[in-house]
Image (cartoon, rainbow, N blue to C red; front, side, top):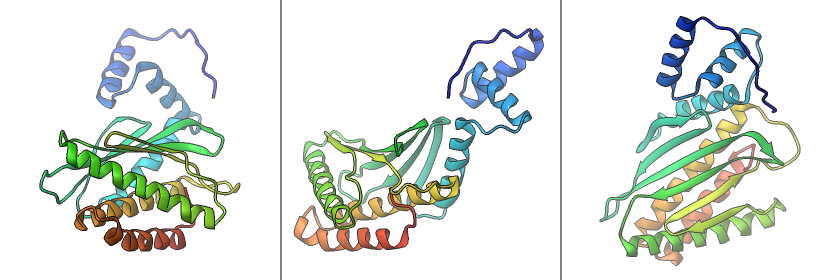
Length: 221
């Protein structure tokens, strides 16, 4: 959606209060004024839709053990932490970013990162991400779904969220789908570590979790 520059004559005291509110919300003066005006004329902005999706995700994740919702750095991002039972006591950080406008069918991305300096742990994580990419590719190919756009960096995994199919979807459906994927992914990586990184031991449970996700989730990403 395009944005343009407009000149407005406003009272200094009003601007001061807007700036104070914008600071507390972690946004800019222009964005806050845009949101206020959009709400007044009953127009749904991309920021309002993203906020609605994330609020629903927060509600869905609140009842999940080990998940901690982090303060949002912006309307376009939600961060969730999850503890991993391992000798280095690493923390998994799931960052979900939504785009203001969709890029084809891609509406956002998931970034999975760990705070660790342990090279053995980083190598173990990279092995998991590679295994996960192959597993997901296998099942998506069987279902004739488009290949996932993803990449692996050192100790990081980044995957696009692109709803399959051509039908439109609601904010609720998108929140449900992203929450379901993160829960399933979190369970898979914990199973992998519980198996000590042994792929032959972890793969059957990972595959079972992914199959359950495919069968139970109406909107696949």
